[in-house]
Length: 300
Ligand code: GUN
Image (cartoon, rainbow, N blue to C red; front, side, top):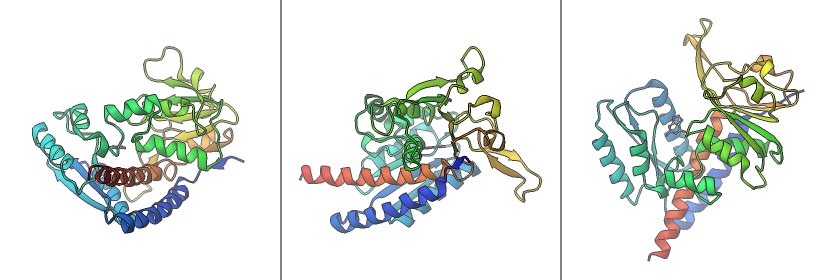
């Protein structure tokens, strides 16, 4: 019987842990961790994500600020907001919801965020630290995957992990985390992407741990996996479903029903990786506030 990795329940446990840590931090330092969220445009899915991040902040005892600017906002105006938040001592974490409108450079915006407030872990300094195995902010979804594996008793030690997708948000950082020489990792890692010659299946069938971060609904079917693989499905794809009131339902990159008989473990969609992303963002925000108070003490 396959182990269904219950991300919702693991995330709820981590949230309770964070509530306790946050209360202790606030009573010890008098500082309330504060996450500032910037959304440019009116994409409905991004609005849901941002509101959900802010709501989780409140539930953990943090402060949050949402700034929703129109899609026509210039890059300069967005940079002005980032500069102002970088200099605001009451803000510890900054998150710019992606994607941004096409006339705004994601790279430019991300590299303007102060690395010490970059709770998304996407700034080149934090990415570089991750690659070097140094402490820094780790992107939330990859951090959540490592946490899911370790809390589910799935060791990556010496395993062959195959990552499908090379995005900056998931593919690149999770591949780097999985091969780090650390107790939660130490896997041999293969990264697959659209540039691969040959068939994707030839690679994925070798995986002991398969991370699917492709962005294509139900792309990984039973013939793409070997018996006993642990599957981490990062996909969040909307597909038409007339039986639903909304007219759609959410599925992953993995065809869950078809691979289920072959896998040793699998994350469902929804309820697998998704809930972990937000709690890892909360953990990073608490860490940012910790660092801020430590530095404030040192500089006094
Ligand atoms: N859009 C989708 N996922 C993410 C994420 O993890 N961080 C940000 N900033 N935007 C996203």
